[in-house]
Length: 357
Ligand code: NAD
Ligand code: DAU
Image (cartoon, rainbow, N blue to C red):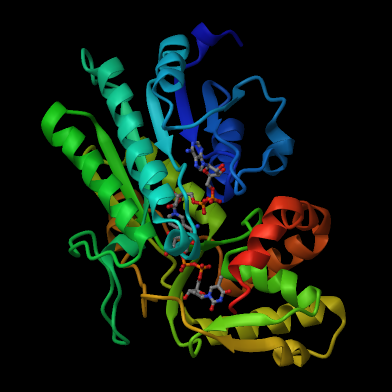
């Protein structure tokens, strides 16, 4: 298909990362009449192996580049007549943000600002049928107590980590570009994702990897913090619905209605991995190692996803038990992927980062 015949041309930023790769896969397969351009810098978290199954599709293009690079983003818009952006590129790990907050400000705030500015300049004469979709996080809302309150779209922002502060700042810039220049946007704020292709610095893949290799499982603090877990494919489905049916200048919360304390979740992971490896279920509990808590560790996140359900009909499609089973099986079946991403530079960084744990 030549470029003129595509119905839409969408830049997905961060498409080689965890969630981005699921979004790219969904859009490339579901919309053969859209051109999907994956703009990714390929940091330690970006991996083209995540997209092997779709890399030869005629409606897919990979561009290696930095969202902070003004001329590169300008050229992309000019050459491809981009009419949509789904912006996922970010530094995404809270622990790294504590070590290097400036990198998070640069990528997450200035990178987003650069994309907004280019999109505004290219689209300003005719904003119709254009959309800047900004993918954000529930962490911008801060932390909940151990009660039954949930984050809604009206909850005030109260970020605590450099990561969540940078995401909150980028959300504010997106809204400011609408209010000041008329840029059409949607924002979604999602809870913790899990599933295939997540970089093994995050809790679930890290622990699957360590259980398999009989390495310590570093539980921060008492393991009592609560997260609301959603299977990544359901997040990608929600992004698809919001991109196509979401109202302009609206925010949608996405979550699993699926809260777990870390320690309870870890016990489920241990049992599932033990079962698959033929070990007595629960025997890897001995690997649990309580370590110094994360600085500023948010107690509890939990999303009220009523708005997206009522307006767009989205609900999680997968029960957690099924999702965790699929996830564990995927990591154990894809040991080569795990070995690749945990070798070399990353391994050195990891050792340095966790020497005090
Ligand atoms: P990830 O770390 O797995 O992937 C990030 C991707 O962005 C990588 O491919 C990386 O190479 C790319 N990238 C980083 N800096 C870049 C730059 N300057 N220019 C171009 N590309 C760059 O992240 P993820 O977990 O897939 O998260 C994706 C988005 O979703 C982020 O914006 C994150 O804040 C948000 N989010 C994540 C979760 C979650 O649970 N993982 C939940 C809610 C929201
Ligand atoms: O809520 C959405 C957010 O979820 C996203 O915006 C972030 O990009 C994503 O990384 C995730 O943030 P968390 O900090 O919640 O995820 P992480 O996997 O790092 O940690 C989950 C919980 O497990 C958290 O309470 C910290 C704890 N933890 C984490 C690691 C890596 C441990 O106890 N030990 C660990 O080794």
